[in-house]
Amino acid sequence: MSTRSNDQGRAYEFAWINALCNALKQYRAVRIVENSSLEANQRAWNLIDAEKQELFEISADAALKTIVDLEPKLVEKTSDELLLEFQRDKAGEKGDVRDVVVKCDSVKWEIGFSVKHNHEAVKHSRLSHALDFGQEWFDIPCSSSYWDSVKPIFDKLKAEKAKHTKWSDIARKDEKVYIPLLKAFMEEVQRAYQSDKNLPRKMVEYLVGTKDYYKIVSRDSKRLTIVETFNLHGTLNKPSKIKVSAITVPVVNLPTELVALKFKTESKNTVEMYLNNGWQLSFRIHSASTKVEPSLKFDIQFIGMPVSVLSIECKWK
Image (tube, rainbow, N blue to C red; front, side, top):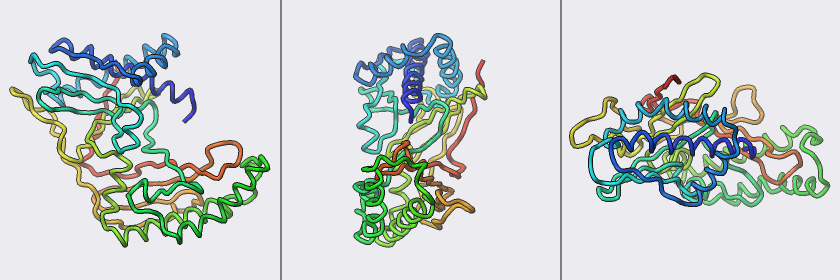
């Protein structure tokens, strides 16, 4: 992600937490927790111009009614204070992808939001000469067969890096780099699946997170804010003392089977993974920099999700 894109993402998170705070304080005591993530997001907010700030505020406001309809406990009239807190980046490394957490400590209740501006990439993971993706993704260390397959490729890339070679100067990089790396990746995933049939569940939890949350995506060009429900463990959509939600959020079934893993049709840099229960993923490998590095990036996208993941479009005013 570019610095500009990252700054805009942080600024949108800042707009979102403030819009939520302003909406909820009409009903109950609310406080935004001060921490380093709040400071970083506020700095990003201060860097964007007034026109962009207004756009972000309109986008955030558009989804508030839907969020309150989904979560009546947010506006429950009580003396208990609601805390709104930005997660630190370290939480994402541990599998919690929520950017904003709303909690009430006195009743041990919380919900979270993953807030995205103009993109829906699930995760930007890497394959490299040193990164053990199996250990990181699904807690199964990569085998010696995998390392034997990828070592010659990454050794060549190290040599090219030492010569300050640009990716654009690498001839036939599809055949020399992308295809053999993706083949090794697919073989390793299949090998790990044979040893641990929980791999599909672990894979999806790594990608979408280990905690339930609402995903908020601003689509500026369409003047839409989209709310998606990731209710994997049934913790979302709880009733308040006097009201049930106006919208029922189903519990999403995690996958239990790896059905297929193959190259995308007519592609040399993308593989597709088909799991049961409606989960489908694509993994596009690409260079993340102009100059050659012994590391490549995955752009991971969902190409299919269960119908129990609701997607609600909120039009801007």
